[in-house]
Image (cartoon, rainbow, N blue to C red):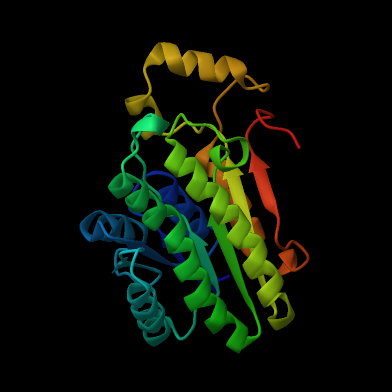
Length: 247
């Protein structure tokens, strides 16, 4: 994998940071793309002191031109890009009847518009090379309409799953696969910080396997879907939710 290059959006913290670390452990050169450049840079240096196998890129995922600049910078740096992981996401919990137009647009832009732009820019590039992998990080909320993270977030993630299918069908003939991963509640610091202990206990008790999910396992699924052997996995939404939602 030493010659394979992956770009992970929203990689400065949370699940994105874990995904970036997992790809690096798998032998990839990793670009940590985030609007929080300093945090992404600190993690990149932690992964690769001389930044020969990890680098940070300042990326605002709501701007298509930022994706273009990131793609071109990586081609200049490492010669090519093989994998895009659209992970960037954000939300603010607001009752559905109280979501403002500004709040809705912001969450849609970060969680859904970013997927459109990433798939367009890197999908076209991968198609020109005749090979490529795109992995979109969705959410259980986008499947079951859960509003614990906000109805606007659930709507955006549902849209990301649909875009995954659209791009998967459009790019398959050019050797490019597009898949989504839909995690359930994960054992991440942000979850413990934002959810009261009593509510978190109720969440855990509702999960058939009886515990929160592992961010490392979600990252391992992303690495699997990015591999050359995963050519026949396309347009799928991979559920990683401990049985909380079964189809």
